[in-house]
Image (cartoon, rainbow, N blue to C red):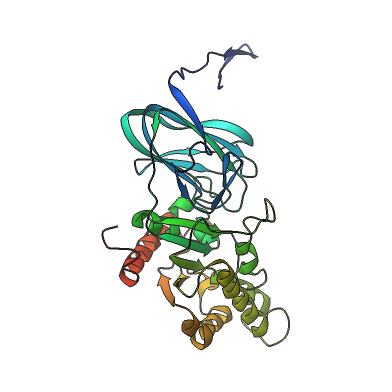
Length: 363
């Protein structure tokens, strides 16, 4: 249980008084994630492991419906995500940013809640780390959180991670366009995103997407349910890598050949086919989002559009959307928070207009 440390400095001497009085937890109940299975709403690219919920990816976590009062706590094991952010939301409003330390610890995610029914959401802000949500503790009853009718798979790079949007200039997924749209649409989702990840070269997206998390183990990824739509935002880093290596000049030899790029794109779609029912699942490629040379019409993005025209528009239910570009974050290469919010609103509108069955106007 937590203790209170009081430091007193007098004449250069530091004395420490330790208050070991346990907090008043009379009436509080602890539910492991196994206890709460079937009651919470899983969010993001998650899976269960023993009595825990594995939260390794952007905006992964859980939503609870609690008939409660007072404080709410979460027990979280920050294995490889120490120093990264967890964020809680209560009744749709951001409540707390938590920076977990390494190991299993208990954190306050809400305080002094009035007696009644509350929706408490706890999500990880980091990408491709390792962390486990182990338990939730509160005073009251555990209700059942409803799943959305629509489930979206999202695959992206640092823009999807919300790079440089946290208070410490780290990842902050809930401020990025993808989460903004999913939240506005009340959709269930899984976000698989990693900074610097290209679609095809030099490291193929097919490899990192088909594994749950190579930083944890070698388990293949299995979605929690069949995706209603897949959203991909990956080509920015192909542009950047091709430009850096060849100064925008690409021939048919070496690592950066058309043949290698084409093969990586084909492998990506084959990977999707191995995981999803691609005959019945639409796919949306997102372009734009930043305004640096990475997103200009260099060889990679032009080649991808050629491949779409020649192969993939006919083979799949494929669309593209270009969101407003911005690069005014602190590194001069990523969208700022205001631009990311706008991009999320643009994606929300596009999804409602182009997929009205999946995203009705009243969601």
